[in-house]
Image (tube, rainbow, N blue to C red):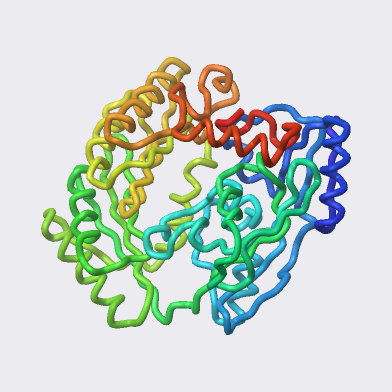
Length: 386
């Protein structure tokens, strides 16, 4: 049975990591476990459980900042900020269960990215324990902080391979006075993306602009608008105009947040494989057409305003592997990149999470890994850096 270590504060976490480094004992860093499917998950000698690192450390409403322990659940942070009329403008997958540290370590963002920015934009400070037990602090607890190197950004998307996050500080915002949603259905994916592109080219900045479709069915474009009442209504009118230009009509959608949350969690559900592609906006329609022609195509979910597209593939092993290879190649041809976000356990040995192509900047990733975790004990093998 794998040992489990559950430190209650930064000092205890530092001791645990230092002792593991001295004994050359590998550690798996785990919060709520909502992102266990990401990367290459290899066996480790012990699990470092961060869930005891919980609570709001500091909240200064006037400065629009909040510092929270990394093991605190996002839903709890959201509730704490709501009492002050504020919110952390992230809509990560698994929002009810995910921890703050896991969200940062996985660079976990949703459809709000194009309006509010992603984790990297909102994170302004971190406290982390490096691979030798050193406690490293970077950034600060105020928005305008320019002292030193902005090392906290390196932990975004690192999957726990560079350090164990203990505290994170974010910019927050006042809750918008009005929120509304709308949706429209299209017979073809190209029409849905054309309608989305028309909105992106306007001055409107919707909070979310998402597309979902499957084999043989309609393609749905969904929009969420936040802000003062007048701009929200103007954004909904622009949405209606773009839908009419593609030969359909738009309707209000009162339950849109729940639908978007379900779409956001597409990688966590069911079997099969999920390919995540980051594409130029103009390349999304061609990529969607390629995906829809695949034998194992089950669902496509796109953040139409930022170019993040996820495709679900199901079928026998040969069908899934062939579909994954085709999608990764299509992403490269479109000028983007792709990776396998989820795949069945039976295919883990045959499908590498990062694909066969070497990621850009791999040399720098390995240098950072050597500097932050010289003994290689943190999440060995999980990231592209190995």
